[in-house]
Amino acid sequence: MKCIYLVFILSIFIDSNAFAQKDSLEISRNLIYVEVGGAGGYGSVNYERVLLDQNKFMFTARLGLSSYHIKDFRNDFNPDILIPLALSGSYGENHKLELGIGQTVANIVHFDFTENKPARKTNFHTFLTLGYRYQKSTGGIFFRFAYHQIFELNEYLNHWAGVSFGYSL
Image (tube, rainbow, N blue to C red; front, side):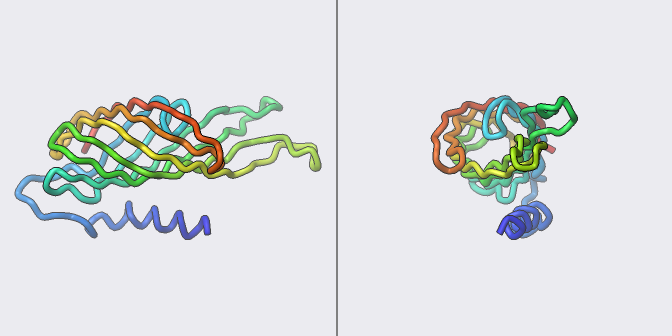
């Protein structure tokens, strides 16, 4: 199931012409940004692809990377890995209202008492996003402020805010 989910997300990023619109203006479809807080924990580096940009409506797919701890409890290099994946829709010209849904895949190191050594456990955390974003269709500076409802382990509700800064290419 995890493999099918990852193949689906990767196919969205690879097949970029599936939703492309032919305009006289060149639309900037790639965003690179850093998010402080938000779905990636304390901070994440993200790539976002604009799948559709038409009539003030924009639809995007996001892939990020983050980490909580770089070293495990033995002080060995063994980072916790967080991967936020999301689909978002926004409405507006340059100033947009954003709604999104996503999944953060968390691969965390813990102590395995039966094996007496570090072990990894993968968890899934669903999140919903409501935010404001400043982004021109033709590229340039990108800014976003978002509220995230994160359902940790799809059971416990947490409230996070995230601020994103980046560039649209």
